[in-house]
Image (cartoon, rainbow, N blue to C red; front, side, top):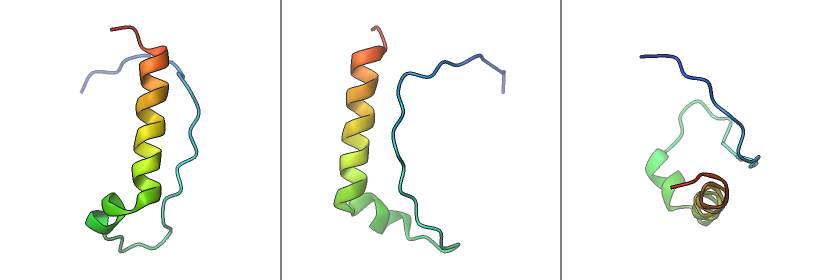
Length: 50
């Protein structure tokens, strides 16, 4: 994989569980995860030109 320089477009707090066995399907269905995805999408729309 090629390395690329990135840039910070926004900061979002990501509340990930600390357990080693995380149920990813349950995490995706969690309302807080949906809110996080919406926040990431909004930050991306505001800052990344199309």
